[in-house]
Length: 176
Image 1 (spheres, rainbow, N blue to C red):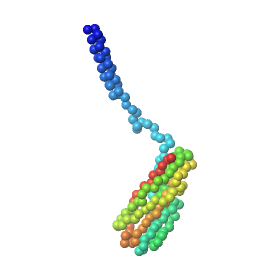
Image 2: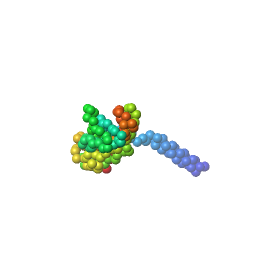
Image 3: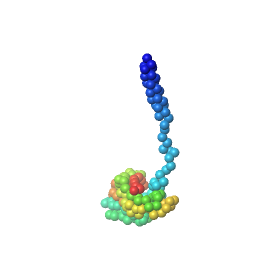
């Protein structure tokens, strides 16, 4: 009989121990992610200036407009660059990264620009200055300026009526 009581007591103690452990584990929580400090070695990208191809006219064949990384503009085929007060310029981004970071740029797909009076044009993202990949050579809080050019493919006047054409392009900055 004594042995049976001891065995029941031992089983009861084990059961209580398991229950106690179960309740204890319920109160163990990890640190919430919003209370963790930011990555001090991370990269931040700030858009400074959108890309603009300026004013132009096209004939029967269409052509291209090229904006270089320094903001100069050139045209091909029968596209005529017009100087009507509409500025043209490259896209500019500021990169905030630790001194000596290696940054590479990945261009996204061609962008579709749609016209306010109908029509659409395709824009290919061009090269960068500094060329990709590059090493940041300024200390924070100073930022590295990156200029991006592009090429706009323009159809004939019937396909691309006069108007304002807008669109969005995507690029990725990778810190290696």
